[in-house]
Length: 199
Image (cartoon, rainbow, N blue to C red; front, top):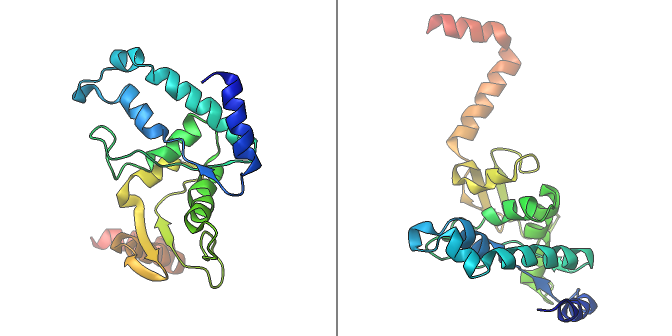
């Protein structure tokens, strides 16, 4: 696209930014460019087919959309052999590393803005931790504000709640960690030393 055409599209999107969201789907472009060797698509092949330029322009236009107040969301175009389902959380890292968003911004895009996109014009109570809202929650071992990649390892997802009901109950290792912390708090290092000597 020539810049004029891009600006016309951005102008139209901006005029309806309360109605539309955009998923730039960079994960598939990135994976094809850098991780598709085993499927016969080398980095050289990908560059010959302009995937590097496509990724560059995608990043450039996505940042322009965000700066115009257009909601941009991670995720999209997963399900290829070199970009399989279940690896979608890598998009969060792409938004931080390639686009320069903070982890907090990316988590807002994926949760609150994602809920708004799902609800559309319907008065569905989604995307907030608030009384009467649907309780869809994750409990994560780690702080995604410090390291957005913790969400890529399913072992770090300790609990999943859907509509206020457990889809995945809190992991046993979490309960064990809590017990260990409680023993330390209430019995102190002397108790810990005694337990080590007994074992």
